[in-house]
Length: 205
Image (cartoon, rainbow, N blue to C red; front, top):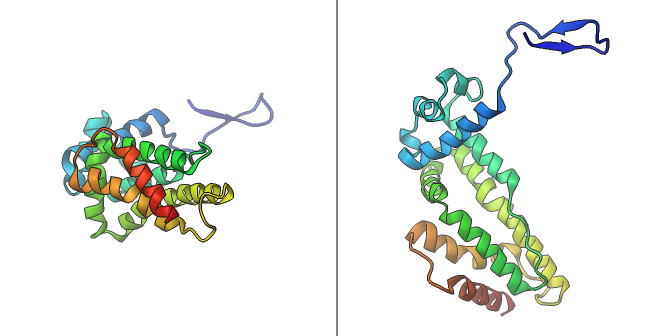
């Protein structure tokens, strides 16, 4: 029986009747199952039953944590936003841009992400809540990284102080996103190097 101790070790106190203790390993199994289920069947066909079956738990374990599949997906997308991308600090604009492209390319080429992101973008047109969460996960965090890259480049004298971080993000990540998520083609050898050089040249122009 779960007991909660007071400051006096000799007087144990029972947890309130009906209090639920949510096991973290079960929560993580459900989260992993959601990503797998999204990649396998998409948001529209995804179900709580399918998630529970893939996670090896009962439906009630899912419903104890989230009231619906929409709230579950929103929670996961929002969690991605809080993780963010690490801001590179290579000491040069080209190095920072190249490092950012490397991280972004690995993320976008992940087999689950490559299936989940396009599907969620389609669903975002139907669900404003998903649209807001996607914006936070895919845009806001990357805007913060781009702002750091631009700030450091300005401090080194590589870019003018008037450089727009949003434009920088478009120039750096936009072509990569188009190729990997929209066109869904591979990256030729040296592509990231060329893309980094092109983005740096455009920012300095």
